[in-house]
Image 1 (cartoon, helix red, strand yellow):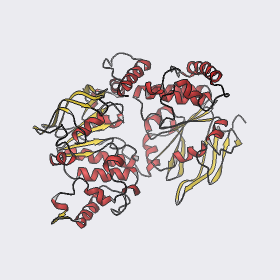
Image 2 (cartoon, helix red, strand yellow):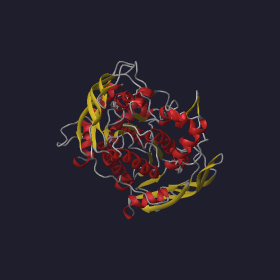
Image 3 (cartoon, helix red, strand yellow):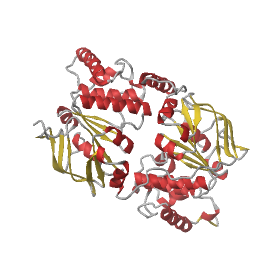
Length: 529
């Protein structure tokens, strides 16, 4: 059956208690194509792929592989059917070598030697065939995330996978590494492999897929040829309404510096220098974006300014020095100086998940006069204030009595943003403002940040999303291995240049190989670990 789909799902439904994650889904993926699946958080994409890979069993519906009805009770059955999956969070043993990770679970017998020799030979062939070069003897903990991702792909190919599922594969890659991954996928397609790409990045869908399926609220809303659609149409299919994909903002009119950072140094609990003498300033009425691969010191900068971490060096807020020693380095003193903080991890640092929304709205500000009634907190006033914030920030469901864990990620983020932005801060620290946030909520969050800038406030933005940095920032500082590699205006740079700087390469006018980029990243990765 040469014309049979590589994969066909018919009438797939799956519920978890009262929540129906997949509703009567049917999809056909043709062999030798790259098929994208997009949708907002909770749309059911990962559930559907987990059914295909044997992690979940569908309540009803059938799976066909190459025209044959196939039962997939577990991942071993999926592998036997020629399906491999590369997860967003890699499934590798850190202190094992590349070769040992590839063989793990696929040994030919009790003696490991023959399996390793066979794997080494096959890895050499696979690396040459698919541009998946990686040192088989390198330890996983000593190589960068781009290389680790190649190991995951090699694992699947070693197990004879003809169908590869990749879940958000570029989330931790630089632009150059992402481009290299796409070349690898094109090479796999040319060899007849079938690729399913789960991503929320519309640019990637348009760039690399042949066909794209859109999911919304557990249902498949459309499947279209990529060449016959547009990012705007796909966004509307995902959300159910028109979405503005660009940040609509006027040019900034910066004023005086609000925060001045001079020779900031941060050493962590293990004695590793995370921030190495950084100097920066953010002015009133501007957004300074810090671009960098996660783990290069940007998180520590936010933590120091937010009063969570001690440091050495100098930080001035409106010309006044703030204490970095830890003696007065706490969130309350920072808030009193006009600093608001939207942390990178909303669930660990921004909210108490088991507390109600109205309680979370007061956290950090519960001592303020408008929340007080004599010696006690005025809970009724906090609840009234929460109702207003919920309405203005379009939090859904609009119920401040619900626990924070009852809201979706995007609505949790809105609760944190409402709490911090509505304090009218002089400086807003915002880390990963749209991480795990649906496309419709991204548009809203960007608008609120720009409104604060237009009110003359300073915003320090940290994001791993380069398109967000480029579209939201008025000025961009690139960080690598705890150092600022340079500053750029968004109008005078692009993703390629920023990506090279994020990999520690400053002579961006020259051509640089992916091996050179990854070697730089791996060296910095080794220093950190």
